[in-house]
Structure formats: structure tokens, C-alpha cells
Length: 98
Image 1: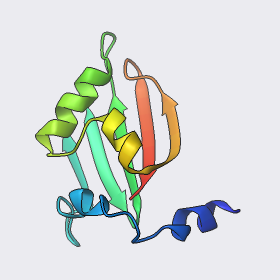
Image 2 (image 1 turned 135 degrees about the vertical axis):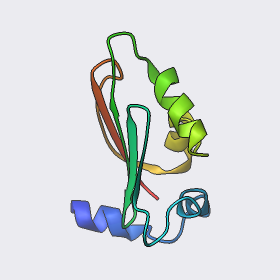
Image 3 (image 1 turned 30 degrees about the vertical axis):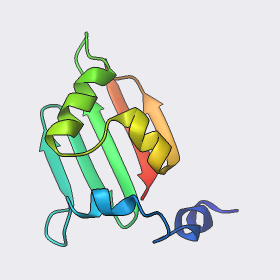
Image 4 (image 1 turned 90 degrees about the vertical axis):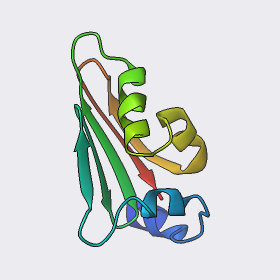
């Protein structure tokens, strides 16, 4: 299965997607809070964190909660994980299909 097929195969079938879709709209496709950037491109939720030396996932989760999004571990349970790279104390990127 190609990446595109995997990306579009479950489009619109996850009832948890409304949690993310309620935050974003046609005019607002990305938001920054602290060192975390959250963006939605079609059905891909991308979370980037440009961390500091002592940053942990708690720093990312605090920023996500301020945006009314669930923490990383909960997002992993709700959505299909597309990719995850890096570490919070340097540069961390995670992508979900929503």
C-alpha cells in the first residue's frame, strides 16, 4: 500500500477527528504556542517541537493542552501514527492521520 493510499484509506472514518477539526478551520491551518507548532494539512496533523536542553514530552503535552488537544500518548491511541522523529530536548516531529 502506498503512502497516499494509506493516508486516504480511512479518511473521514475516525469519529475522534472532530476533536482536531473543531480547533482548525479554513483560515486557520496552523498554530504556535511556546516552542510547539501544530498544523493540519488535509488529514495530517503535524506536531513540531523545537525543544530546549531539558525538555520532555511533558513540555509538549502542556502546549497541546493549552490548544485544547489531548497529550501525545492519547493522540497515539486515537489516530493512525504516520511518522515520529526526534526527541523533545532537540527537535521532535510527529504526524497523525485524523
